[in-house]
Length: 100
Image (tube, rainbow, N blue to C red):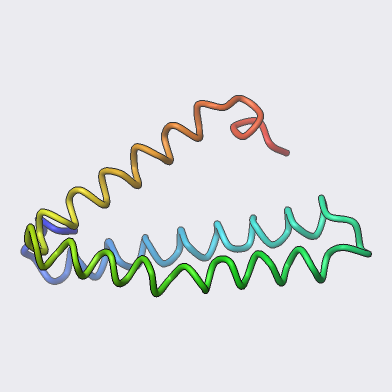
């Protein structure tokens, strides 16, 4: 998205991103419900949510700091490249690729 000058293409890419986030969220929540025992589900879900939401401000702060130092476009390229690389690295694990 950092290199797309066309507004329509940005909207389309953001639509795809939002759909991907929604699908991942559904898979994550269903996996938690299936794999975690009922007695521990409340605690696990609470820790999952607080961990996710507690780290968001830290990520926003670090991203803003990085963008201030090296520029917005460059930081978007570095961070998105890191995200793509880490996703591909995780998908190299056979148990994750073949998760039912």
